Image (cartoon, rainbow, N blue to C red; front, side, top):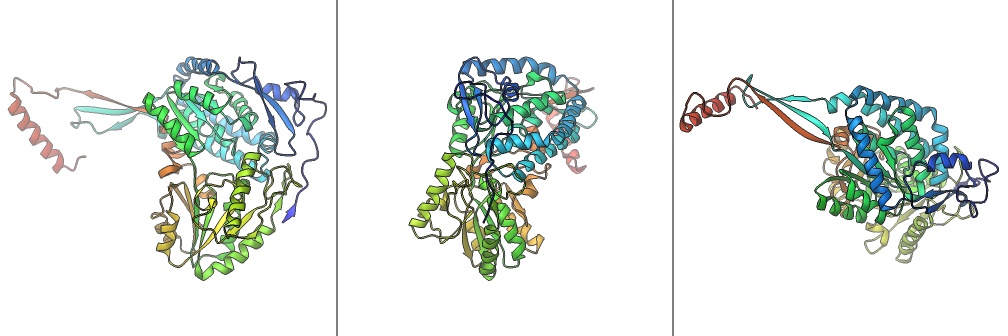
Length: 538
């Protein structure tokens, strides 16, 4: 694997030492940081330091929110939501389209900040910009399709008019992760705003600045400042307060935390959507284009250093092509450029933290100790960055190894042979997760038929995850322990609304008329029901 020199120093000159000045940062200009962190609702006086995975460069001290601050954020959001819900849909959609252009115009600034906070490769950070723009455009252009009042068949033709309104939930709480700090901070909230809700957002502590810049862009695009509140702090404290105040909760993160949030929402009888963990399978069928599949596998496994909910961690390859595929996959992996920098030439960046590095290292060491073979990679590379770990391909992984069934969330994949497609599907469905899967074949129809048998919320044929992730009209989410609810598509916006049915009855009541007895009325109703059935009416 070729190497990329780590970033040599800060982007700007002159900030004070953060050890002695809580507003200072080495990597970013102090006034720029202050313009972002002022958006945090915080009166606690406490701050949390944020450092970059690129050389450990200090970035900021982020104000921390107390439970009282969370309550204040919800109070502000509720006040603003009333006027926002009364704003015409076209005006809301216009703000979304302005955001689309603004994100593309400011992409360099956004990418720089994402790379500073996450350590990911610049090309992976760009994909966040692209996905955010796609999301804004999709919901702006389909706003009326999803939100307009819809006529439905009434009880009696001509006599009963029935329609369904989409009413906003109120204030949505969004708890977003660090791995995709721009898209996860904002993309789930855009349809909530479009539907007339306000949002209280709690981004992950490691990537607060990106989320705060996203909030700033919302305001610049024309969204009222008060409809998007940002709080910061430890998940158990601040996350619990969000669940206690929200009208709906959207969470992306671990299955364990998702269960806790689901219990809290159930206690309050509010809805939630949860995208949780995965141990995603990729199937390479005997008729697959081996070289195309190998190239796809590199992206499937090592994008964002494997820190992607929908990336592949289990690779099942047909006997007939196994050896050729492995040779091509290993060769392409070894050609990757690694590093922790802002350079476009980096293929795979850094893990985000020591905790992620510890998990990845432990999984690889455990597998090797129990008999697995490392085909390439397997080493921590502190010479390239404090948390850089080589892209790693394992063979001979068995059920007694940590990485067999547990999510690694890093640049590690296990290879397995399969003899028949029924076996491959059975092994792909093994375990409790069901987020994303990938099938590679020259026969698209065959791949789609096989996809229906895989118990995952999304399945990509001849692609890893981008085809579903980038198709905004297609819902995305997990089955089984990978979550509940969906983002994107109609489901992604309707989850933030209540369906309200309104029916108007004309001329005659739904009751006995003209002194008619209940028995006679029942006979008349029965005749009417039979007639409507003969006429083919639903």
